[in-house]
Image (cartoon, rainbow, N blue to C red; front, side):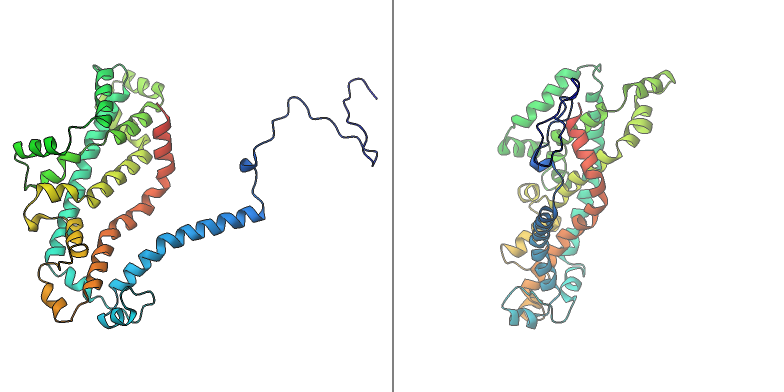
Length: 319
């Protein structure tokens, strides 16, 4: 045997097995290896179960909202298997009554609030991402402090009341317009953009506004899409601000009307007589309102899903 050859003792077959080299990569843990057929089958079963757990309640809500009163009565409540489809609950809800008005309120608050929140968040994140900007460190510490210390509900309510925002739609936007977490995610993504790219733009005479609009924002489409979804879902699903700042029922958003209908068992304005006379099932109306509240989020989420991993994880890790 050569002095430069390292061999293990001969096996029963007479073959030699080379010893592992000291430069070889260490063995990977079991959970990082390629899954076998049993592992793939197990993952498929788990994913199928998770999808079923999400879709099954949604199926019941939608099917019940599309069922007649007779079908709901025969099923004893929630309907699992549809027997005929009717859109009478949706027709009554969207015929210009309280639910229609509440849906328009929620839509308007979501559009205006999301636009305002994204504008302020992008400007704040870009300013905080420029390390040499005036007051950068103190401003960043102030933002971080608000994540751990808050004034509380009563001082916030007194502030909104002193500003004359009660019983106005601004009370649904301004008190919760800015999320420091979202600003920090945007800041982390902005700081990950190549400094050489920004420096070259400055050499060519571009100012901060032009750099932000033509360089930073186009390169940050993924994280901007994700944060926009966060703000939009927050505004669309918000109900607490309306419950404490609004007293006019005509100004209530859709979520508050749904709470009034589902929890308090109070029919929307204009539909009480239809439910009492048996033309409508109160349960079908409740499920229809739930479906209307879930519909925008279910429609928008798939379009943003492809940006979620890149935008959220990259923005949270960098910086």
